[in-house]
Image (cartoon, rainbow, N blue to C red; front, top):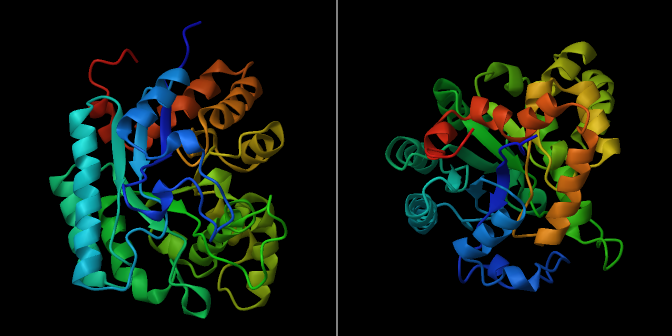
Length: 330
């Protein structure tokens, strides 16, 4: 049987000069594989060819562009999006992209950048972080202040890739082997997703197609906890409504594909809700291959589901990707 087409919906760029362009980020306790930096599109293409990945949807790491809101932040977002669009243009059939935005409290700047990226640059969707700001100043994506952004995304039926922020907790990470990307980012994804659900924003803006990174982080296991306890704390939704709304998210498989986690996703989400992802170049080719092997093994007796996860679900969610694959045998 021919291998399924593979579309990686969780694939980053590390722009030159950014913190991620270094091979060690001591502030979050994680080492980027040294062979992946300095990052260039060719670094990704070599890994994609080795992993039989046909197309990758690029996005910037969370925290980019850095705030505060203002003209400089807007210019930085515009520069990132034009860089992403040029990468796609220069390597047709291999890359798509989720647009970067200015910090989300800059409503005017964000709305202008969404329009420019989607309408002029041909972005396939928009990348958002679970929260904006640090510590006590962090504001999560379901905040009322961000409603105009969600209204715009909803009116467009846009796809959104939601990634947990690299936010430190109130304590240090437990061990040098357990930095923020390992311990905190999955929970930040859950906090962003849960905020949208229990405030009613997920059902208020139903046309936005939100993809949660890393199989939702801790979202799927903690959703029943939020269902009852958030209702107790005042959410207008019943436990059943909360659970129903959690089931409307999409998830990618980056750094999460294992029979234990894939089984949970399969039991909770519809088959069209799971999409393939790697998190390259934050991880090495071999690390991504371990998860990819797990994914293939999990679906080995269900080739139609493997094909759906590998590419069909992404193509259905983001029809613009079909245009990028001109000349690729589907």
